[in-house]
Length: 237
Image 1 (cartoon, rainbow, N blue to C red):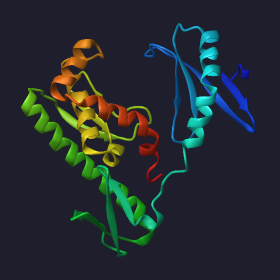
Image 2 (cartoon, one colour):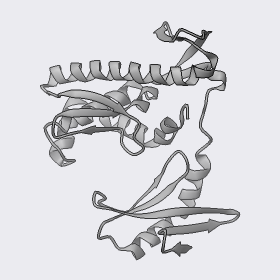
Image 3 (cartoon, rainbow, N blue to C red):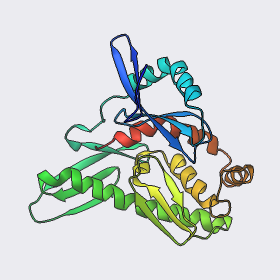
Image 4 (cartoon, helix red, strand yellow):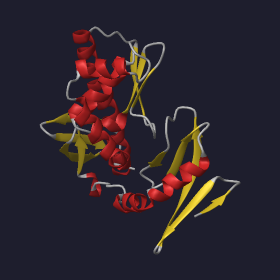
């Protein structure tokens, strides 16, 4: 294990393999954690006042797990020829109609019909998915809010690399549009999570009790999201 002070990089090596791990301090971190994204970029995150030596020992203890995790991350699962995409956990066929002047997209009976130039197919599908998710997530959030007494101002979508959702002090909610690839119960959990932050802007016991009250089976959806976050970030890159 070596460290380059200028760039705060820790290099781990194992039989024919090596990985550079960026050391990052965080005011939000409550403990030491290893973060790996869909590009296999790896970080060792420690609390702002955390002990670096202890963090490095933790990293060494997790070395075997780290290499196994990196090996499990395959290249982005781009659908060949964009013949199908996943929407809320279910495969949908993509029907492309070539047109040099018309841009449109619609969904019906498990098929997404896209009219656009062939060179713009991927961009057209991405635009459709983002619009579709914004509409569906807004409707679901409104339904849950009415039933459980929440009130929010607006909803927007983003493509954040580390967050699935956020809630501002101004009661604006934001969700990662890549949740469109996740099962509906996972999407519902993330929406409930952020709605509960409207009443508890923290992750205290009161917060999680509120989440459980609204979504009793949230733990399974939370676990699914943790196990599949890399895959969700990899689709259609």
